[in-house]
Image 1 (tube, rainbow, N blue to C red):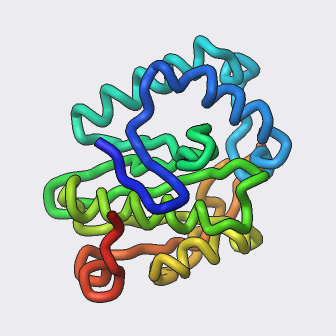
Image 2: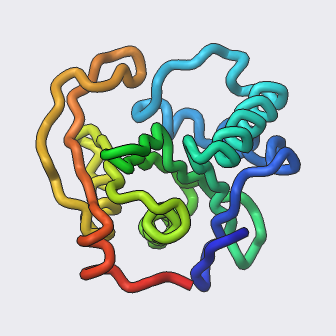
Image 3: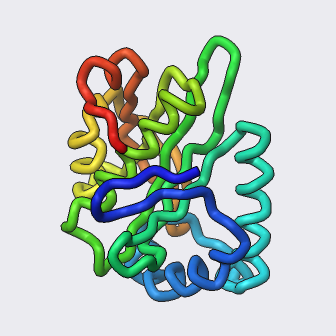
Amino acid sequence: MSLHTDEILLRPLQQKDAAELLELRLRNHDFLQPFEPIRSASFLTLAEQQEQISQAQKAFELGTAYAFGVFSRESEKMVGRVALSNVTRGAWQNATIGYFMDLTCNGKGYTTSAVKLALHFAFSDAGLHRVQAAVMPRNKPSIRVLEKNRFRQEGLSLRYLQINGVWEDHLIYALTAEEWSHSSPRSS
């Protein structure tokens, strides 16, 4: 199962991706750290990336989270990751979306496209009603990605997540299936 545009391909992470995911994370560590939690040194090992993928595969099968590698269709290299996490069923039918892209791919529209493809999956394949995102107010590029995908800002959550060792405020954005079906063209 995969989703794609002319430039990128999204597919569920597989064990064969572990070394490439590790390399991507190592190469972008300094770039991404201001936007991520502090993790133990063991996180940036092949064994831990294999474990992360194993957990992602189990969650995908259970329908509790959906993690995708983002691959360049030109080079076939992994250039990012997008995930629908914290899937809640019942009356809410909600997930949170998170993503990162290789620094060298910034400004090419890849992140916007990857989020759009993940939203297509969320509302079509996963049958979710709502997808939300939390972003630090200073993370203007990520805010632009959400706005381009027609997320609406719902409010500010104070000290929402511990990022890089600090409890950071986050803007909460959301999009529902109704908004998606009325405003967003489908991706192939």
